[in-house]
Image (cartoon, rainbow, N blue to C red; front, side, top):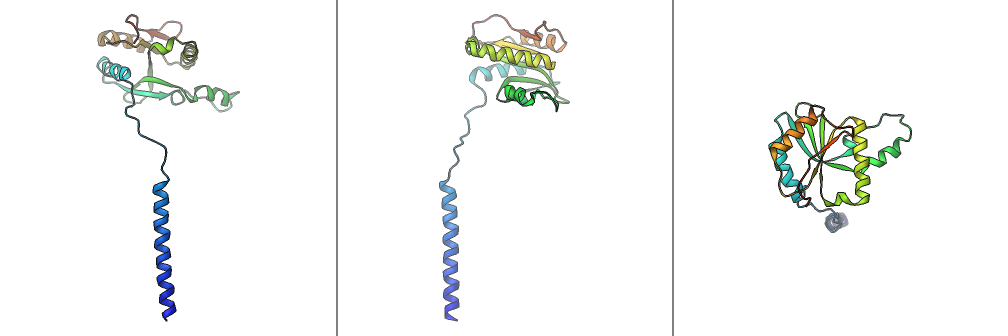
Length: 178
């Protein structure tokens, strides 16, 4: 009988030790992820505020949307994975969507000085052509210190009405890019 209680006590101590070791190991195994301080850069946040003033209530603004969430490829597409790889890690700055259906209606890229680099120009040309062929208009806006909501509203309305040039895009002119 004494042996039984001794066995029970030792089993209990071992169980507690295993639980504590497991909790300690879990606590020491930290994941490397950290929360970002903000989703948008200061320039994007500034533009986002003006964009909110420039659109009607029938549109929602989505920020930093992956291109692969906007474009799809039918099954059986030749070289499908190659095409998917080309859009997989790309995103657009803003997407205006129909508030009733969330259908993407207009893409907006805020172009800062990095868009002048050759590699970025190639990326932009690919993006513009891919979305144009998919039937999505794109508005390129040079990053600057301030924006005119009325001008932005006019351009957005024009693009949503189907008034785009042959490239499927429009751009706001003027203002030194920051």
